Amino acid sequence: MAERPEDLNLPNAVITRIIKEALPDGVNISKEARSAISRAASVFVLYATSCANNFAMKGKRKTLNAGDVLSAMEEMEFQRFVAPLKESLEVYRREQKGKKEARKDKDKKADSEEQDKSREEDNDDDDDRMEEEEQNDEEEVDN
Amino acid sequence: GTENRLVSLPRSRIRVIMKSSPEVSSINQDALFLTAKATELFVQYLATYSYKHGRGKEKNALTYTDLSHTAEECETFQFLADILPKKILASKYLKMLEKEKRDGEVREDNEEGEEEEDEDKAVGDSVGS
Image (tube, rainbow over all chains, first blue to last red; front, side, top):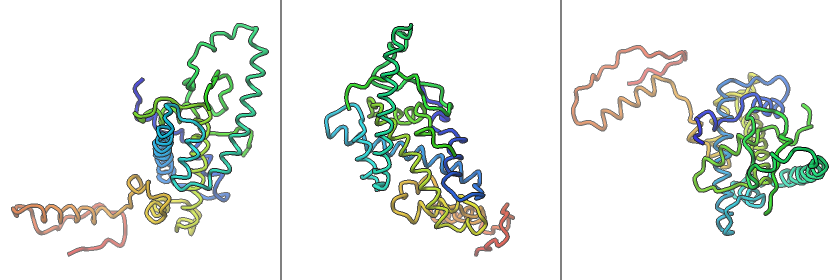
């Protein structure tokens, strides 16, 4: 699947909202500033991925895991993110667990097609949906 | 804003960016979530830091220059320096190019006299040599 250049960008609307919520009310954000932050965010993802991947390789693993990302944050001097990330991860894992259990009940219905999608990685959903993706069937083995 | 969702950035898009790295084979679900969440924290941090330390706030704004300053002055954000270059006046840039050309070439077939008007909007245009 070839990436078009715009695929490496994050949705403007979401970026704008995150910025607005972080800054005091009423602060104007120039279009140039917004675009710059969006690009910076993409670069951040690349940098974090590369860093996390180094940790995975050190551990002789081919799959990036949560620990790798957290280690990357420390390495990149974003230690301040580690605690909030860990908290969010807890919540996320609980949610996932809850969803799994809910799905077990739905299993009786004809949901079996979703189970055939790839296990290790996320499905490619609609890019710009704001809601959390609820129907992903991501059964991870390792952690 | 509502805090109902755990992370706002679309994970599928984050995944596309991550996978554009050739060395990456696969990404587990937790790692993807954390990367998305970390990116949000990053956006917040970059915005607030730049606003706090920049001059845009004198006009109640966050400007590109604020961001560019952050990349240059704060070590944590230095990895952004290349994509957030400082802006300079067009006239200065053109003069820089001219100078490089002069320094680089032995021949002198370029006009020495730069009498052209530059298309700057800035008022205080520096009139160089």
